[in-house]
Image (cartoon, rainbow, N blue to C red; front, top):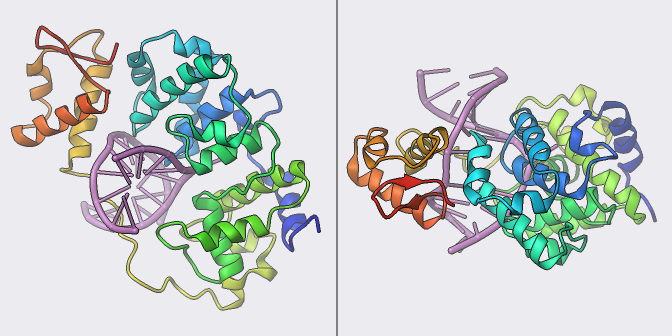
Length: 291
DNA sequence: GAGGCGTGGAC
DNA sequence: TGTCCAAGCCT
């Protein structure tokens, strides 16, 4: 059996409705695709687009980024958020140069061993860059499968083995078809089967969706709490790092002290940034992006 | 396995 | 306006 009950409809929908994203074009390299996948972790496409363009122009190959200090990656990360990903991508570049002769590895296990590359990203790069057959299970796919197959509005908060089994059971046999299927279901979740106000009228599998057939029952269970941000260490970290990114060189401690008036929290955040390798404390008491 | 980790747009 | 959400990973 080469297809699941949805594959024909979803693949046809994708052909007609897929966005023209640069990392999906045939000429996109595995390195460019890896950069896109790391940038897209928890970050909307519209914010990734300009950053991705800047990165692939400046560092077209892993060796180009590996030759630079990590701080340049952090600076180029700009305000994408979760700047540890910039560090991860830089460490990926160096690992790829050292362990894989400068080329992004094509095996799932080699990809998984790269810093900041987890099960989703390894499967995505193996599938999208190398045409391999892997189950793609990101937040979009989890939501589509929760609705279409399980008949619930939202998937569980943390990914379950049952979800992995389900995604694997739906994977078409032919690798090229499986790769197309993976990106197509993601796109369906991103454009139609959205978290809020899904556009069911535009859905190619509306007549087979368990959630719709059940009358679209609302989410049942504890509220899915969103993370607060204002006043947290994360906000302080963001402000501290912004000062360092925007400065041409090392920054005096006083400039960092100015971003937050609660000194205990500010020092804790700065220490954490240093511990994470995002900030270098220099001998003279100033601070800089990592060298 | 629950919580930490940025940022900004949409409603 | 505040809440929710966005192609997760790591500890």
